[in-house]
Image (tube, rainbow, N blue to C red; front, side, top):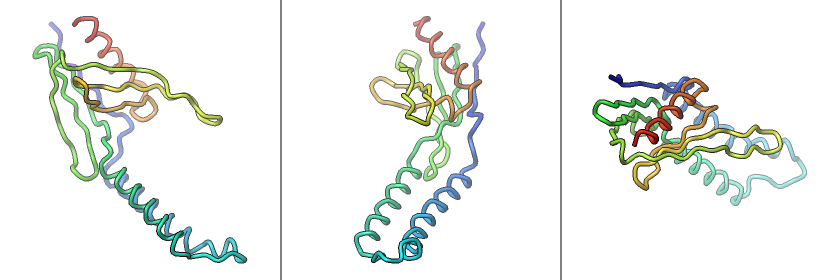
Amino acid sequence: MHSPRHFENENLKERSTYIFRLLIGIAALIGSQFLLPILRPNRFSGSMGEWVITFVLILLLTIDLLFDKMFVSITFDPIVKRITLRTMTLLNGTEVKDYNYPDITFKCGKDPGGTSKQAKEFVEIYSRRNRLIKLEKACIGDYSFDNILAELKQLVSVS
């Protein structure tokens, strides 16, 4: 008999860490506007257009970080044929949702690395046609990623 297998995000930080990073990003964008006259003294700075662009960037950064789903854990339960996915958003906190095995599909691959970046391995988990979450090996940890990928491949071979 198989028992449920549970995998945690090895690299997950506290919500306060993500909020602190958001505040640092906002402060850096606003601070750069105030430092432009010092960095480029012969150029007019502080125009309305630059401030509008800065606040649009702040808004986009804030929306992205508030609503981005961060992987917390996944549990494979072969007895009830269900996957329990736990995610966290800064706005809503931790969410737990169950999905039946027949509804789950996945796609794995590598994002091409740029000139200075290495390629990132990823797995996208879908429930029917809706993407549930994208897991990147560098973000969740090597051990968890490899075990989750093995479980998903086993799930497909059994179905």
